[in-house]
Length: 256
Image 1 (cartoon, rainbow, N blue to C red):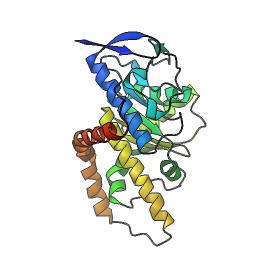
Image 2: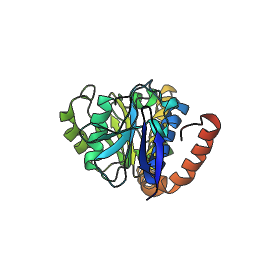
Image 3: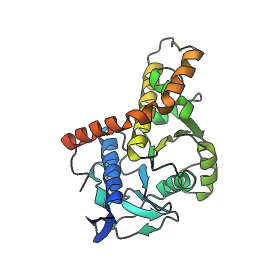
Image 4: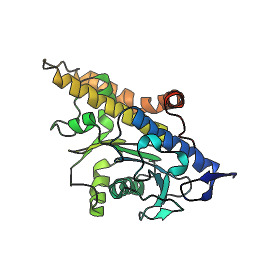
């Protein structure tokens, strides 16, 4: 396998072309989160598992804003939270707790995203959770899990409970906290998060309208849920390519 040379914050290291591609996609996801206004200063996090090693994954350098993260600045850590390689940064300890919990048991999760958006957190504080109010919500509700809030995720003992609550789902509402989405690749995780966040935004707007709500029938809810089982993955490739073009126009430099 050919090698690429990465210039990070404190030196050089050789990585495979396969890892570099994941780094570029992950950095793009961080930039897109900033572009969509989903970031929370330096907080929240997105991780990507490295190929051929279930014990290593990439995450953001704690202290950089999402709009300045690049492929070479991402930090490699192991399942014990130890940094692998050279960097001038550390990682968010709460980020390690959440992401290591998912990567430890979900080997199909190539990427895991966690956000604190206003809309996502608003729905995560509403007792009913995500309601079947619109097409976007119907496409993702059957893939959605819920996890009780236990405080800032610094306690590693929370991980088994998070893992149990997540099960085999690809999205999660963290009660009183925010949203989580995962996928086999960065692009699929990002599209899952986009649909989840969009559904939350629509719910907040619908409830704010102050009018009686119209719900689809149970049969339509069931049909749309089945349509969403594989539909998002099928379109993730063309959506991701379009998003990268948008990023290249508006916030370039992520591939550095």
